[in-house]
Length: 181
Image (cartoon, rainbow, N blue to C red):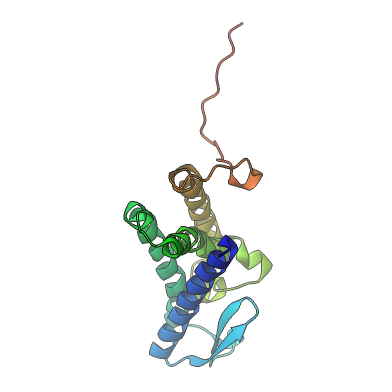
């Protein structure tokens, strides 16, 4: 099978867990209306219109899914040596892409995503009373840290080496070599 299919499998798994968590938490707060299949995955529709949402419940409804999928990504990253040794090839591929998707998707969703498509940040902002730019800044740092963990540790451990510009370490704190005159 083509690796791209495993990537889409990992993406669908992450999207299903993310949106499923929205649905479950919304059920707890009696806000769940319907679950839709949309072109890029899944979507939960809530009872209360966006402009009428307030209260801490919206922080939990919007934020719990991001927290859960990110935590799954960290757990997968931490147990990478055990999962890498699986004798089942398709399971190793799903695992490989799941680490990447789970560690990067929600930090992207909460840092850069709001500039593109809005997303969960509105509910987190309304529910917890934290300004969206603070949320975006924190999750942009998480995105960069996770990107570095993947590039510096995870990809090399899986024998992935590339010169692609997006997959190069940032080297923000690299010491400069002094030139001797």
